[in-house]
Amino acid sequence: MKTTLASPLNSSQTVDFLPLEGTDYVEFYVGNAKQAAHYYMSAFGFQALAYAGPETGVRDRASYAVRQHKLTFVLTTPLRGDNPIADHIYKHGDGVKALSLRVQDATRAWEETTKRGAQSFMEPKRLEDKDGEVVLSGIHTYGDTVHLFVERKNYNGVFMPGYRAWSNPHFQPTDCGLLYVDHCVGNVGWNQMNKWVTFYEEVLGFKNILSFDDEDISTEYSALMSKVMSSGNGFVKFPINEPAEGKKKSQVEEYLDFYNGEGCQHVAMATSDIVRTVTELKKRGVEFLQVPTTYYDTLLDRVGSIDEDLSPLKELGILVDRDNEGYLLQLFTKPVEDRPTLFFEIIQRKGATSFGKGNFKALFEAIEREQEARGNL
Image 1: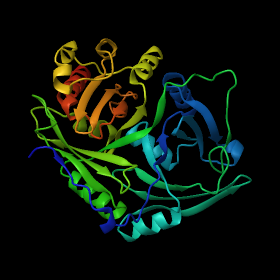
Image 2: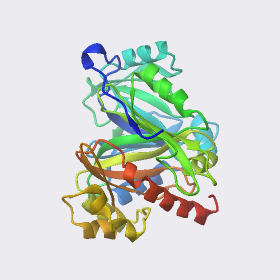
Image 3: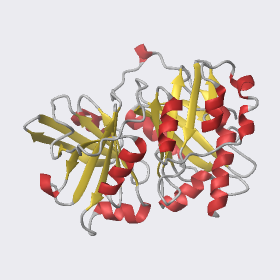
């Protein structure tokens, strides 16, 4: 089987029962939210936005929200050990807990998904303060990851009730040109991908728009399979990976071992100038995977003419791929935790709607070199 691209359904024949407006925020459960917030500000160029904790009436946790353009991260840490957040961190290490999706009606989103078989994580809850109201609800997805539905059309505050504005006038790092969440990738266990594909199709009304098998995504040593799920309006995309048989342990198997289960493997962040963004990130200490420089010897033969000068792409290690709609430029960080789990992708789309199939082999060989250095290949 080769890569398959699903045909778009006739919109007149389908009704999107869960219209999503995009990713509202990504919430990470971390061991020390204050330090994690500082890391994302200093290394990735986020700005301080809002804080919740004992000073705002929240007794069991502290949360720091940071923002860059339309990209919002929430870093949350438990304040005591006897706490589900502490249990999550003990099991998984720092990682993504909530992929939060903006909707017009969080109550209806919860009703529609739970009646289709989703397990409820949070019944609709109305949060209010002097700036208006936010309605939250949520469902479970793979592993301990959840989707929160966020309705904020009647809210004018800095982030949401329970938070107060947070800033540090003496520390305001410049942004790195990160704009919004392009997609988030989940790693699931052996033979679990189709189960979760069905979940996203039946529970959230997503469509499988692209599939890769172990012939597409493989090296001499390891392989994986992946299917890309897209919301009805195309605003939210969740590729799902599962391991495939190979001579040695794949990156997905390594993730599952160290995360102790299924979870979000990486968050792809969009930029309109990847050369500037990656240059800034490297200056601030962010480490990236590096492919051999021979990758660039035949790059233009593979992808055709591009707007960018090849020299800075080669110097920075930026990968390029083309599909029928255009081309994209992408680069992947090394894991940002001591456990080889969560990492980030920086992506610039110049018309392309795909995910860089032409870079898979070079990328995964780079990942394998890192796995071998860790003794986990």
